[in-house]
Image 1 (spheres, one colour):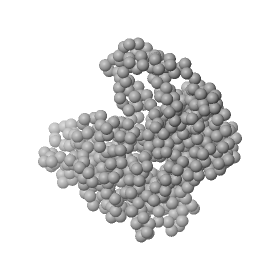
Image 2 (cartoon, rainbow, N blue to C red):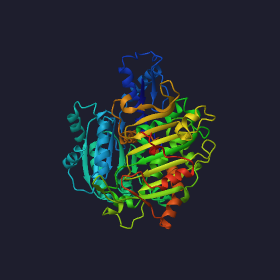
Image 3 (tube, rainbow, N blue to C red):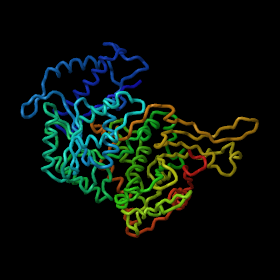
Image 4 (tube, rainbow, N blue to C red):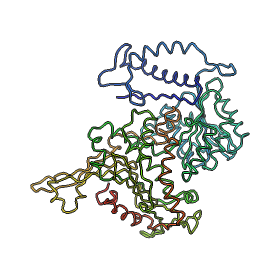
Length: 580
């Protein structure tokens, strides 16, 4: 059993805030230790039990009790005072969702906050504010939110009571995103809820990127915390290319420090993506194999079985490469391919990811295939083409599918193709990593596989969604008197092994942002390196007006993707008859 405690140290905010954060963290640990019946005072944990912090480092429980007892007695006797001399009893967190009436807020952010509240993961004192241009009352916001809140399948008890408690902490402020006056009004309402406590504020920008800077400017000048920390979560897209991304970062840093900016990529919060480093660095069987010596290719695959569905106007301005490959898939690639970090601290991990991105060859047009889905009729049902969307121009060349071959020029991965594939309106919905190993040299059983040695290739599959799983394809003898070989799976299906419902990625990322944990958020130099890879080919595609290859809605994508893989002697693992 492992108990994880998160710390929330931030160098970007006043010392008083840091001391208070550390005090809260110590109090949480002290309450657990003093209430735990299996850890009486002065006794070490048993051999099979270790208390660890969020980065995996062991804590000495006995010495922790002694030290915390002294600290708490001193801290409890001191009352904190704000700059105006008023007493402060504890701290509070105010979470403001900017763009509260949008789909992302309704479908993901508010439900994630409620799930954290249900699991008692949010601070004791917190409030949630919605901010948007829509004219709503507090009660109307609560009614809107309540329609999307659900309880965990395994935690239905007191669900309605918990919902009501959460909704009573939700409030609304109507205003323009660039209005300083409206943000002053928001600040006044925040102060009313924070009265008597050290105020910490988190802003979630669930708004179009063209108004990021206006909202940040107003929030920074008129609604940031006077004494506690202020953090801002920024949703993708982070620009359209290197230049626009750098400009956005430059403008944001006029009002915020890098430590205050939390660039969110929700794929980094998915369970199987976060498990990547655990799988590799804590299992001796994998780490020695994680190199060009044993791995033939790596495939990162993202597919959706539906089209743009109302997002055509947004999507046509970005396309599948910007929407999926440059961020989601590239971030997964960096985590997969990075060297062992010095520690599990956020900066050490992000340093290694940046090294991977900077070691990669700039993507060339010859290593890219683009496609766009067309109308299709199947089983008497008609499916629309991308350009049938009324918000999309009829002559649009925006790709809804892309495949690319990327390479990392370092000692570990030299000449190993990393193949990416992402598309909409395909035959299935999935996101997965496929690691295809090299053929066994001098294989004694090659006659049993015939001339197609790919059938004998071991493959590790990490299925991110749906039906999260990790499985390894191995060769095995079929029981019987003859020597017949079969390809079988060693399968870890999460739903069977871990019956509890897996938290949504937004829950993990929101909790990390509240606690100041930056490991799963994107640093500005990561962003620069990622855009440097894709910007040249994006500009070339647009300058040359490359027409995407059409593929039927619900198909396996354009044929060109197969030729791209064959160019590097690779077969897409998700298209074989054995793919799961």
